[in-house]
Length: 156
Image (cartoon, rainbow, N blue to C red; front, side, top):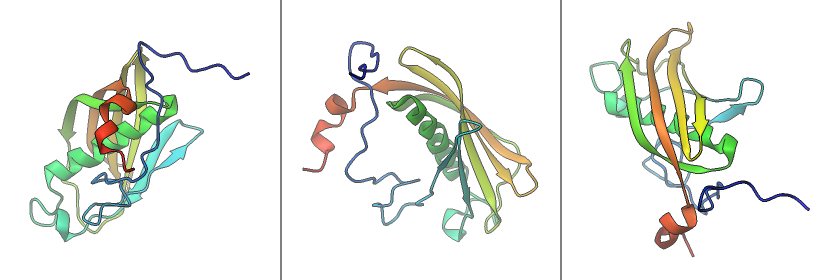
């Protein structure tokens, strides 16, 4: 008989929502970015390759900082799936190292730094096709009980 995963006071295991309306990765959000993240099992890293359109313009020819933060947040959030939990961003820092260009091949990678109880610390980077880091982030995520937190939002 399989063992139930160890929890801390409530069930924090990941439960896939019926619809994904996430702005960054949700396929059910018609106005969203619809980025697709893939797990690199060898490196235990979530990776997404993408190009940004004019819709995400901040400075001329480059991406808006809020969009950059959203992409980094989503990449870090994906890492929590490695522990089969839903965890929400508690705190996040972003370093904007170089302007992120529009219409160029980009890659974002999210990885785990540390896990302690319900607290997950992750990082992410946006890189160009020369592997130069354009922006990076570090985030603290707290695992939650999705059945309690999202009960009124679940599609019936």
